[in-house]
Image 1 (cartoon, rainbow, N blue to C red):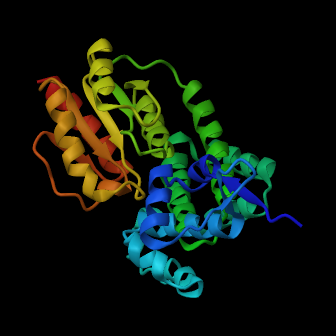
Image 2 (cartoon, rainbow, N blue to C red):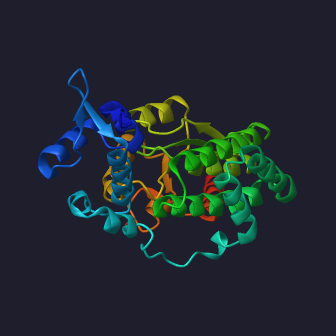
Length: 303
């Protein structure tokens, strides 16, 4: 019986590790060890793909690849769940039983039940509380579960897609903002997570700002061009905890130089929670600080 395997392009998409990295590891570390198909092309057994996926997850947490690849499978599997975590902030522990229920629906693959439960909470709490007290802590908990291997990749994708659908429907139902301020929302290349952006867009639009969403992974030069084309007042970037922290300061400095001085640059999300403050960049680790910054901007603009 043939062992299931994936070609190098599929492994790249599945794990987030580039083809160049896979080939380099093969030469340097002797892993992965692909087989060859009838055409002489690399194919990777599923067990190696699973190990690569776990290695990538641990790399996102700050581990070095050379050390990870050398570890036996048992030790590798224990690294994620044993990772210590700081205590949750009060905003992340609101309505924990309800959050657990929502996670349970995702893990039972009950898509309709999950969407229905979200819609009920939205109707009961209103959009601002729904975003801050349900979606924000729920996203954090799902991220922890993914890091620990307690949730499958397809389950995390199901959560993301269904939550995006509910948030976008909620945003579309809001009245058009008055353009005060005009806010461009996006992420830099290598940042694929969009839920942070959608949460900010929902709260800013609810507060009357005009939001210009560009989605994720936008090159810096295109962010600059879009800011000029749309005459925006603020560019807001989202950084998830998975974004390499070492890349953030240089990226923000470069983008700050590309933007006109009159355009504010805001950076939010779990990824910048411990980042060093930078001149010309306002760092907003949580949603409440984002709303406060919006109020401060309006107060200064009216002077």
